[in-house]
Length: 167
Image 1 (cartoon, one colour):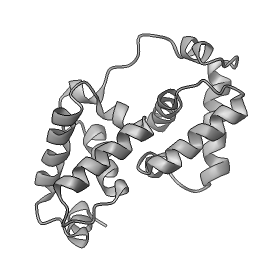
Image 2 (cartoon, one colour):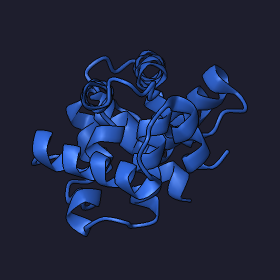
Image 3 (cartoon, helix red, strand yellow):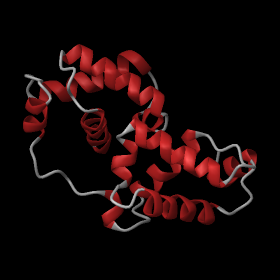
């Protein structure tokens, strides 16, 4: 279903462009130092972002998946400034894994994340998981358990998931 149809079904009266503008304005106003990648890769931030959008449109029944899916589309189509998309980390993934207590090689960790996604959500796309913060959180906890690295940040796991999506 098209975004315009989804928005209409949810009771949002504005256009798709107005909705996209609302998302970007909310991000800039409420999360000034946060990128779209950071919202999508941090379940707590994604949940709060969605709550703020719903609070600003109490008459519309806007689901997390519509809000975050649109944000992901904005990111993918580069319909915003590069500053909002986020820069690649200058710190190597191996360093982040080590800091989180994970002794796996980068390639093994990427395979683990992809395998955990398949085990938990077989048939669902990475896009679908990123657009549902509670499922993203559950996936992160599963990866942490499987990697035996309870100190890995959720954002690191989901950024690896985002990088897998790009390939």
